[in-house]
Image (tube, rainbow over all chains, first blue to last red; front, side, top):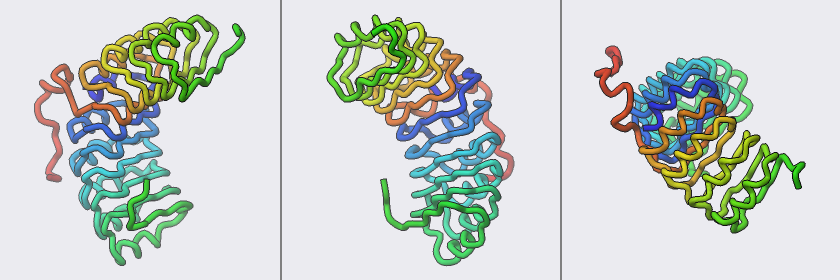
Length: 143
Length: 130
């Protein structure tokens, strides 16, 4: 599949595979691509396992994983990506513990974790983040 | 119009026949053909030697056309959003060594195909986290 072959693309920095049918296996291939800074995998079928693979892509600054199947553990993996400035995890289900992991990230400027059942406690964690310029916690689907 | 470097023809009805005329504009570097019902005209556009940025969003480009596109080595930005590209031929795009930005959103790409080099690599170590 394309994701595996893309590891041969030495100059690629911006990759958008939104709204395909990519699973954890595809995420594993994608994670092998060196040099990616902007990655959009929204609206696919990536779970916690895929989040682990993606979390190993240390050069990413903009990451969109909206509308996947990432839970608390996946959020913990993603929270290890300290280079991220813009993160979209809307419409997964990271829960309040997932929100706590995300709140520990440094350098985030734009964050969307709406529709994740983070609850009041999760919101409290997020409220303690420093440096956020754009925050979306809307519990409502938005295109 | 030999001096034109950027051409935006989005949302017309260029179709495959129209790409024949466009392909004669050899100096174009940035070409936007979004939403033009192009299905088999990619081979003509591929003969534009200076093309570095091409937007083919929302056409009817399928696997065969993706293979042809892969032969254009000069392109750095390629937008193939909302076409009909699947696993089989999308892999050919990986031969475009100069690409810096690739948009394949809203196609039919799945996780992997039989040719994946990692298929024989066995399981990927996830440690004890799962």
